Image 1 (cartoon, rainbow, N blue to C red):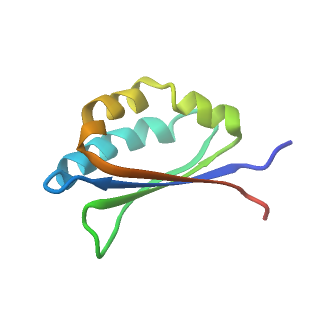
Image 2 (cartoon, one colour; image 1 turned 90 degrees about the horizontal axis):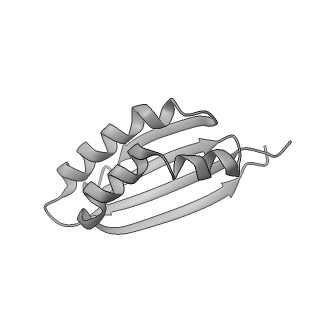
Amino acid sequence: MSSPLTLIATLTARPGHADAVEAGLRQLVPPSQAENGCLQYNLHRHQEHANRFIMVEQWQDAAALSAHQQTAHFLQFGQTCGDLLEQVDHQLMQRIL
């Protein structure tokens, strides 16, 4: 059995759009947490950079993460907030302990 995958997604909103991005991310959290294979899905806002959001995700395996990226709520966030983002950085890690 494979180890869970951890994804740290850092999303930086364009100037003036942080509140809209936060609202979109807040809508994304509950349905994502309810997905099969989701072990953790938590939203954070950076204390010093209010336009930066960090999503800490943990998935049972690569298939669960892939399925998440095809869900209606994930795709909807991209459609409604994608243009409001200045930068998105993903760090995908395999948990070893």
